[in-house]
Image 1 (cartoon, rainbow, N blue to C red):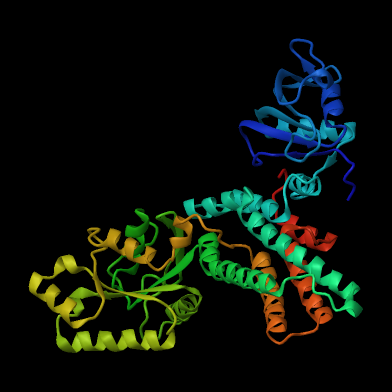
Image 2 (cartoon, helix red, strand yellow):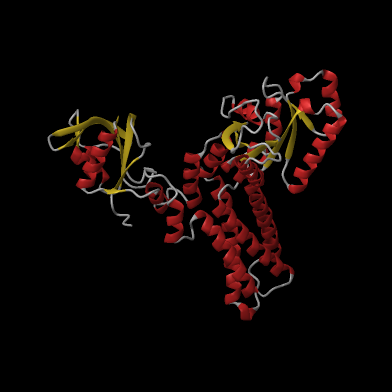
Amino acid sequence: MNYNDTIIALATPSGAGAIAVIRLSGNKAIALASSAFKSVSGKVLEQQDTHTIHLGHIVDGSRVIDEVLVSIFKNPKSYTGEDVIEISCHGSQYIQQEIIQLFLRLGCRMADAGEFTLRAFLNGKLDLSQAEAVADLIASDNEASHQIAMQQMRGGFSSEIAKLREELLNFASLIELELDFAEEDVDFADRTQFRALIERITFVLKRLIDSFAVGNVIKNGIPVAIVGEPNVGKSTLLNALLNEERAIVSDIAGTTRDTIEDELSIGGIGFRFIDTAGIRETSDVVEGLGIKKTFEKIEQSQVVVFLADATTLETTEARQNFKIEIEKVKNKYPLKPMVIIANKVDKLPEEIINVLQEDIENLHLLSAKTGLGVEELKIKLLDFVNTGALRNNETIVTNTRHYDALLKAFEEIQKVQHGLDTNLSTDLMAIDIREALYHFGVITGQVTNDELLGNIFANFCIGK
């Protein structure tokens, strides 16, 4: 890839719309734009100031393609750190393609996925973790994931890692200096201060690593499986949660034969609800496949909502059988949080409802049909997510690559700690320190290679 090329891409989603934005970046961006732009006031783009907007027409010879607004961003005060031109044209797909094709003929190259952000990284406008946060920000579909991406794009995570790396690097320099004067047996690095630093780094790394459990579910959403016997109201509950008729509802047992999924944001956190086929003994091959898939979805879920028809729990025997079914699921999936729900309570007298609450522990009463208890269920589901770090605006790790690098850095820091405890020779300890510094650098991009950059930016959209 030649980073001296001037690149072009559509920066807005493809398809027809009111307007579209076409972005150019590179040392010839302004000159190429000027050659195809005729200002209504006769201005020449090369002579205009940065961060200015100009009205005119994009022309191909004598042919006018469109009336446009051209925005100028001169290096280094641009997103990529290069000269950048943004052309706001009418949103016709034909117009978009005509303008892009014109600039390709004039000497531009089509941008690769994420190449604008890659150039921003290479030109020092963003570090690597900030660049990755750009993709997360574009993909954010709820308040929490948006908040985390914004914090990381502003450098919250980067600055925390960079500070630790700088302090460790200072001590590493002193350790290396000791190696140069090994024969004199001189200590340049204060071991007490060094131990305190290692303990502080260990504490911060543990917190960041632990935060990934929360960050991962916030970024990807929390899968919630709605399970139970046929005709207990699973599909009605899904519809009530989403406030729309998403699943088919009928009085016929076994109506849902495949899983139905949809997402909902609760308190800024994304939840992915999965309506599953009713669990029962059946000779129907298709229904049997649906039940098999139900257990697969329970396996994949992080929370299980176990639903029962309250009208079938009036007898002691029925309640005892229900509790046995609950224990079976709990024993099979011991680590999964479970919400136990008695649905259709609107059909029961008050005295029976009281008996249910007394007899079945942690029972949540609900009527999916009337909406009774649905909002309380949402609050209960939100309680399963530890949002304390999010509320306190702490750094939360959401990126698997960062998580892997943090684990490796933590492992090396533990070796350094062990070296301090056992008076390990300075040369061996220096190796572990260098490894830890390497893994810190991998996160922010101070250590990188073409393969790593290719993997990261390949997941970006074209035009960003």
